[in-house]
Amino acid sequence: MNVEGVEMLTYQIVRKVGNSYMVTIPGDTVDKLDLDSGQTVAVQIQRARVEMRPGLLPDAEVVVDAAIDDIGPALHYLGEN
Image 1 (tube, rainbow, N blue to C red):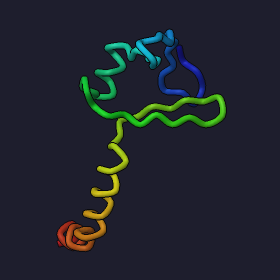
Image 2 (cartoon, one colour):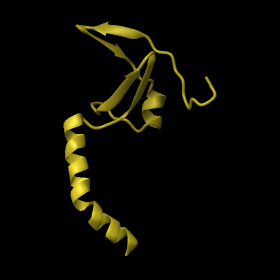
Image 3 (cartoon, rainbow, N blue to C red):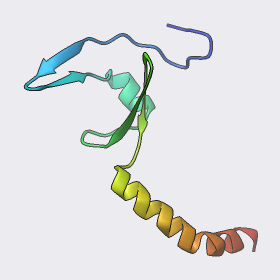
């Protein structure tokens, strides 16, 4: 379905699995987003809107941000020279 401002819109069914719920991701969407089974994704919920994207676990994101702070100037220098 093509909706203005939305790259992809799909309708999926929420299913109960044990004490949790899940929504499946169609195979073509997994391919388009280059996702792998077991990969972490970030799910952001705002009001009645849910957004999903590939992401890091919060602890890993903190480590990556700290590393970028440490080596960022060196990477910037290498990029310019």
